[in-house]
Image (cartoon, rainbow, N blue to C red):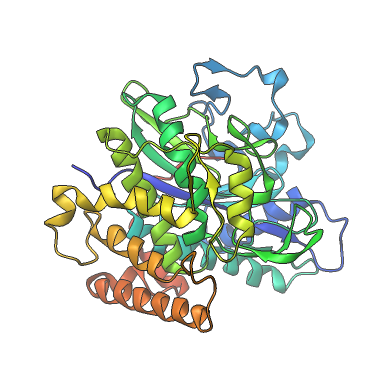
Length: 413
């Protein structure tokens, strides 16, 4: 049965700065951020609290382990106790079951494992957790600012990652083939936008994705250098004989709830198509160039060369994935409402498409207002569907703390 129901979770790496002190130690400030949230709530916060024994960040889905000596330090999820900076690796499990911790030089919020609709709530809860830290530190001599924007436009990028539990029986090469065209075109629906072209914003302009310019490879194990479209980290946090955890690093931090819903929901549906052997067979001639071209083209009219000699726009590629997802029996027979079985995401997917300009029309007058109105409609639909679970949608401090405890997703760089 094709459904968005699967174990999934999100991770947000926050950019950090200490106003007036560009030389501040980012690891120390990241630890202060986590402690500022944990301390007043009586939550335990230290590296020793977290068990790293089951983590294997250097295991590659292609069938090998990277040697620790060959790995960049950013690929490791823990730090030896004898290291001077190990004292700053704070970890805390928040009251809503998320993990809030120091991931090298930045604080990170890792959500509980959820459905796409829940993820919208818990992603926003993560923003409130970060805000609580900032407000707590405002009263100190060393206040900090946190940024959910993926890049400082000076060459640095911090990620927003996704995790999906996938059937181990699915060949990893099939995952790669099915996901690369989808991930490249997905940014037109859930990119957060960015001022500047290039890693350092060296060229004037606006682009669709805040992360696209930082990717250099189609497939790879790295997450902070030579970033790949499909990450091969094989660390399932589950029975490795039955499951793998797809660790997705090619995504933007989004503040718009519909974009978050579509990002997770549509990806889970595409994974269902791959698992069922129903995914369309598409292959781009030059995936890396296509990734950058899609992000830089605000008209969505760029024709991307395919390996068979044809060409498609990003919107046409998305439509090609959507068609089999919505034509399965369980999708055609389910009432069009925001429910837990996947109809919520399959409905939002084409509605978001409808807010996009077509290749023939480009960006007409009023396009932005139409997209804004479409998003308002979607937000209203989401809110109305949550009337029975209002305790998880009001983001005051007590509300965030009142949600049920759920298993954290684990640590990821």
